[in-house]
Every structure is written in C-alpha cells, then in structure tokens.
Image (cartoon, rainbow, N blue to C red; front, side, top):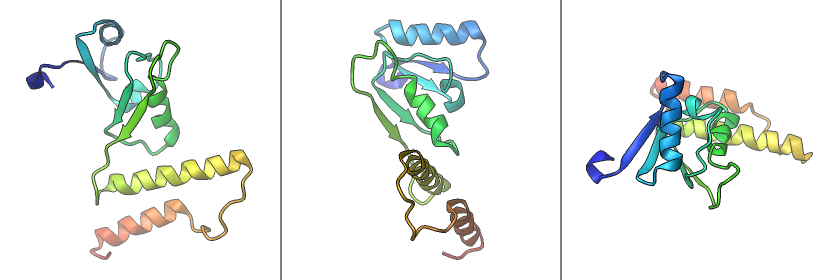
Length: 142
C-alpha cells in the first residue's frame, strides 16, 4: 500500500488501548488514511469504522457471526454509503471448505429462524462432510 502512495492504519489485538484508538481516529477522521488493516477478532468488537464503505475479509472464522460482527463495524450510525463486503478465498484451499461450511451453517440458522422446512435431501452433517473431505485429501484421495 505504501508503494502505491496509500496511507494505512492497523488494528490488532496486541495494541495498547491508546494506540488502537489513535488508529481508529486516524481512519475515521483523516481523509489521507484510506485503508485500515484489522485482524478479524480485533475488528469484531468495540470498533466504529463508518468512514469505510468496503470491507475485505482476508481471513475466515469458523462462525458466520464473527464475520458479520466485523462487517457490522462499518454498518454503523453515520454510515452514508452502501457497504460492500468481500471475502478473499483461494481456490482449492482449506478456506474454500471453511467458507462452504460457514455458508451452510448460516443457511441452516436462517431456515431455523425463518421457520422454513429443512431440505430433506441434505441430511448429512455439514461438519462431517467437511472433515471427511479433508481426510480424503490428506490421504491422497479426491
């Protein structure tokens, strides 16, 4: 980013409270700071980044709620623009399976909350299917 002339801040779990607040304030108030790089867990709570309109999740959590919380740091009072969230997922990696697992779990939760009937064809455990896939791949199968 620096080579492209972009000023950034970072928000991480190992920062002191004043350093974290300085980074948040710089991102929200300094028009010269265009990017905030945050760890998923550090960005998930107690953070207002309404100056942003794009969120890129470069790491995945095992839960959709943790990702949603990180995205919601941008969906705050004072946000005047539409927010777009992106997940960076490399093909043929463990992240692909994790993303599928998260999406499936999120769909299951939505069906449970909406009262929709579960798909009778998908009786297999998502976790079991994901683990079996990983086991097969690690043993050289497909």
